[in-house]
Amino acid sequence: MTNRYKDKWIWNAMSPEREAVAKAQEALVAETGAEIRSSWIESDAGTMIHTLEVGEGEPLILLHGSGNSVADWVPLMKVPLNRRLIAIDRPGFGLSDPVEYHRDELRVKAVTMLTRLLDALGVDRADLVGSSGGSVWALWTALDQPHRVRRLALLGATPLMPGTSAPIPLRLIATPVVGNLLGHLMPAPSPESVTKMMGMMGEGETVGRYPKLIDVHVAAGSDPIAREAAERELKALIRGLAGFRRRYVFTEEELSGIEHPTLLIWGDQDPIGGLDAARRATDAIPHADLTVLSTGHAPWWGEPDRCATLIAEFLEAE
Image (tube, rainbow, N blue to C red):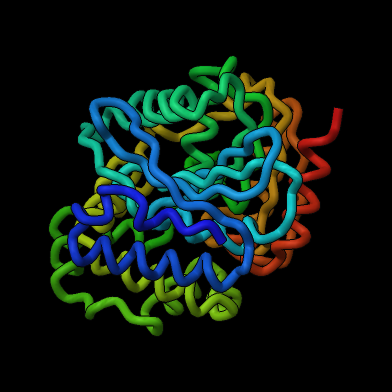
């Protein structure tokens, strides 16, 4: 492994909480034995964005979900894909700097941030792999900046698609008074609490296969920057107990405008959306293919080799 965590002045500027996240990420990466590289990219206005990279060849951009980080992609990154995988800590998550935005401008802000990151990486037209909130970013970019996207692979149910819904725990967190109260009452993050939360997302058993990934989640749960980023994104997308904000929900008509080849890998135990939602999305997107696996919201945790094969075949298809 090429260790670049300590090669940057950023390390010395980290808070103790962020340093704990960095060390947990580093331990997770070291355990794989793969040549996964850690680095930072300067985006706009001095915002530093952290990435993990592995492999060589055409770039493949990995976008994690809300409340998570690049660490979630490590089980997939250790499987050879014959591509240059670039997993991005979205702003505020993992080790990346946060950014300010109003909830009504999240879509515009997300597309702007992602396209500027592609510019910084020297990528004109990207293949995007997304999960959960990262899939939302990928779809927004494909719709609003279609010339910057070549293909889309969406792993797990994509929130805001027709037929999906926000689980009750996320709605409670997004409710201002209740969410603030829960934040004060919740115990400190622990392996047990992380496993329980992942269990609600259909991945309680699979996350247990990755103890060092659980360590990253525990460390991130104590990081106020990451907690605020997750809470801000949830409140932007979810209107408390009412569920997803109508302004951000994808319609079938909007999805029909996606001309990019699209791969959907959907878990049959995903609480965000069942198989009816998966079929609706597949029918709405003109060039979409669907594979259903016996997984929850993070199908590549339980089936990393299968997901890697599906993605590789999808990227190589004419």
